[in-house]
Length: 477
Image 1 (spheres, rainbow, N blue to C red):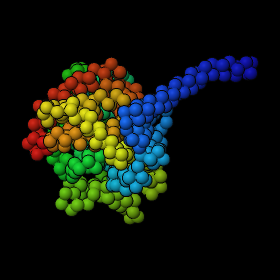
Image 2 (image 1 turned 60 degrees about the vertical axis):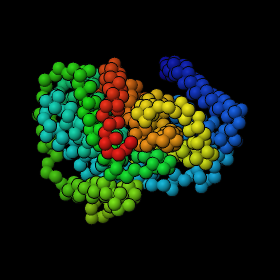
Image 3 (image 1 turned 120 degrees about the vertical axis):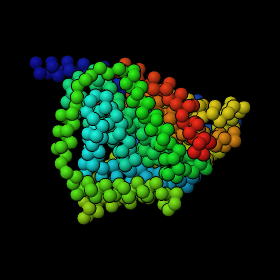
Image 4 (image 1 turned 90 degrees about the vertical axis):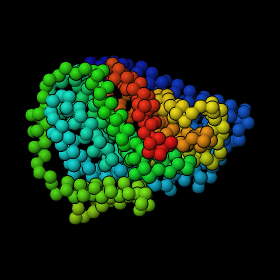
């Protein structure tokens, strides 16, 4: 009986395993076929060997990312090695991103984020926001958004913020009796995601992809300080985030009158008085905020600031973070982002960034800066179906800056609108934090699709009537 059962079980699992393997092989075959086709086409139109290999290997990386057949970080780390081995550029050129502050900025952000969660300050901020905004269902949505705005500049990882707010939102649903995927549960969890997605666009260090966008732009000559970025984007992103919550309410039309006061007050009371650790952390985060906002005056790169503040949290005497916790940091995020930056350095090493600009320039000539800004938004929206935001930024930000300069436009609006286009999602796979919130099982798919489709259309309107005029007022056009 045992052997029969075992054999039957094996027979049931083999077809699935074989089917899965066939799917993996097909993805690999398609990826390699695209790579060979691009290599042959590039040579056929007269590109140099290094230029042809640059496009071929970049397409291979894009396919591997899109099909998710290998870990994203592994592909990003091996891509520059491929560039070097095929002669795309010399190690000093291709690996230049590894000597720049970007990777250290992300690592410092992971360290300060660990401090924020380990001291309990992140949870206190989130519950305080719910406490002060009120506990009726509609007011809770604004409380969640307020928490997102406070936490965003202090925790520069979108996934980390989604995990924190996801836990809070699930607690709210359970306390208010909202079943998973019910209308109200979907609203609460989507509000949690919107509290991450919108505010992150208003801060230079709002998330890794936003920071990378600005770092890539800097390599093409568009330098923006933390404070300048704040002036350019915080106010319109405040409007953008508020409108996002309004769209959520208008599309979903919540009917619940359940009050979460008891749960919110109980959770907030259980935190007790602000601890010494939290007070120390608050002092450090205030110092961090001041140093970031004054970077244009003291000239210290944000990457070094984040590293130093993060390091201080581990020092004996402060004891804000246990030193052993350092090993729990997800360093794959650092490798992935810095590895992706080699796409830009490879383009510059071969001159392909200029070739791309020359090819696209005729399509945009004769238009206006507003038209180019809208086109950048649409480019981000479309490419988001194929690439992660980090990969998209690594591939297209530098050409967008170069195209703007060639047309005689200020590229700021084009780079900013490109990032705004990348913030449009209708399917969970398009962005890992979005997928995380959906995977919690509380958001109905049809609800999500309706809300974010409407948000996408409204975002384009906001770009034209709010963002673009505002950028003109603050000198970003």
